[in-house]
Length: 392
Image (cartoon, rainbow, N blue to C red; front, side, top):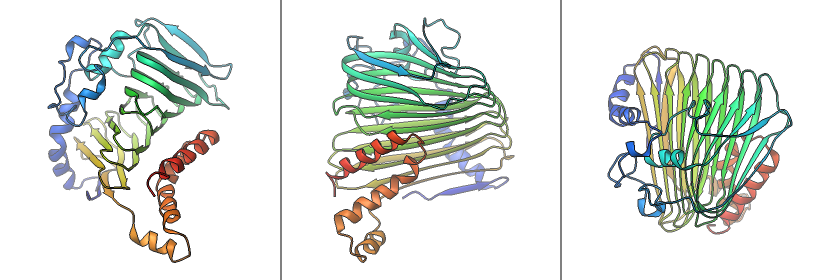
């Protein structure tokens, strides 16, 4: 179990943390970024970015052998004020939030036919979510979607992935000055699906961005959320919930790049694992650049191992290039059931199996409540209960 670390402004510990994490975060930040897949060598699994990923299970996404031969049924339901466009790859909004930083993201950009741009106009306050349903019907598909939430607008976006297939995509979130965007991305794939995606968020001045990533299904899911700030005063909250079952590989690799002053970020990811060869990977990188005075940031990853045979790799990294910060810290913890909690519940007449279910539901409760969309919350609580049927 890794020890939590809180670093107040001016602390000498910050320098030691920066040195310890420098090679990892600096390597990731200095990696080439390009829309051209030819600029990235084929990974072999020894690279830092790929050392946890079972390349043989990527179905050719990483080496160029995957071809767009599949079908993805897409449906977008949105309030009337929202515009939905199908655009070419030379549209100025594509890539504005971020550039592909690995070969699969570049492959996705090089392979999609048309991109989808969803725009919430300036000062619009949506009373209903924008719902994007993506249902795989087999084969390999590539995609690129941009959500442009303009200045002082407010919106909730739900992206729901179901079905089967192999999917590589880039998703961009442009959060305008003073805007508020909440994104819920649900990965509820069939057990044989493969999903690799880079999420890029560019947060404007005094804007607020909340991301909730929920991963249940799939044979292999590898998501790469990245946050950058376009001006001071931006706030980002990144929450994640994953339930990794036998044989599944679920990997979440996050990067928050604090380059603007007086911005905030808070990262909380929680996972539960059960079954032989269940493998969860969480990489949390936070960089506070020299120009980011007044930064306030914290990241935490917690994992609950329910059975033998499961594996967790959790690596929080924090690099600080200025001492003029409000605070920074990180924490990582992996463990089994809390025996004291179980004893407390059983002592009050609750059977052992039900006590374990209550502990797991409580473990995830704070993250589910962050979603704020009632039908999605209910569905996920039901999904958690279904998953627990096989473990306790």
